[in-house]
Each structure stands twice: as structure tokens, then as C-alpha cells.
Length: 64
Image (tube, rainbow, N blue to C red; front, side, top):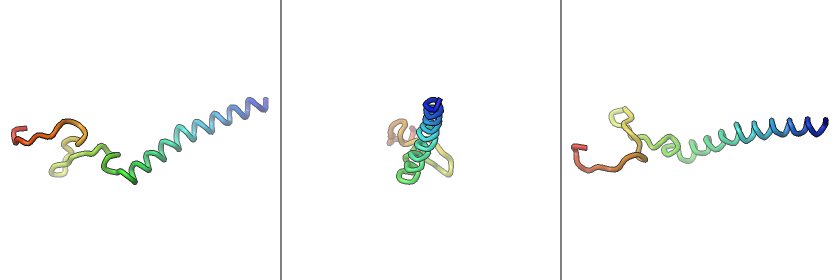
């Protein structure tokens, strides 16, 4: 019975640690170190989001 309780407690601890704390830590480091990239490299024009630097290609002609 002692082994069962230990196993259940370990599963709960690992689930909380690796399922909640680790992702939050990685997200926090990303927000602190690379805030522009972590938020999708968004492009704004006149205060409105119009796209992302990571999607599409650069055009030089005004008709695009």
C-alpha cells in the first residue's frame, strides 16, 4: 500500500511540475528574452495588426 501511495503522489507531482510549472517557466523566459518573437512577430499599421513577419513574403510593389 505504501508503494501505491508513493506512486500516486509521484504522478501528481510530475503532472503538476511538467504539465504546469515547466510550460509556464518556458513561456515566461520567452516573453522576457524574446518578447517580439514570442508574440508572433506581429506587424502593425496605424495601430491595427495587419499580419506577421513570419507568414508570407515581402513585396516591393505598391499594388500588393
